[in-house]
Length: 69
Image 1 (tube, rainbow, N blue to C red):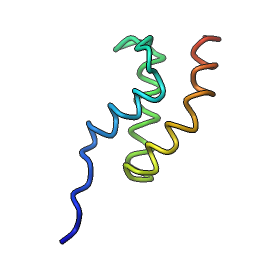
Image 2 (spheres, one colour):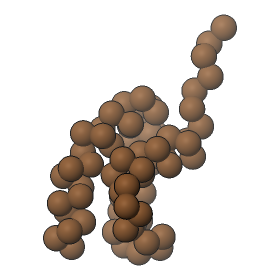
Image 3 (cartoon, rainbow, N blue to C red):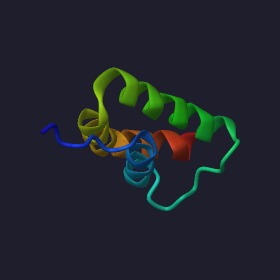
């Protein structure tokens, strides 16, 4: 039997938790939309496990980017 894959919403929420743990991104803003689109692209192209790995590794860089914008 094939193990069940995490749902896209679950993966997205977990990735956002790594990238924006303090919930500073505001839904509907350009910054939020940009990060959302990037994560959804990762999910489509790489799958849930690689997406979460990339979110963990990229969180530091994205945090610096958010502070500068």
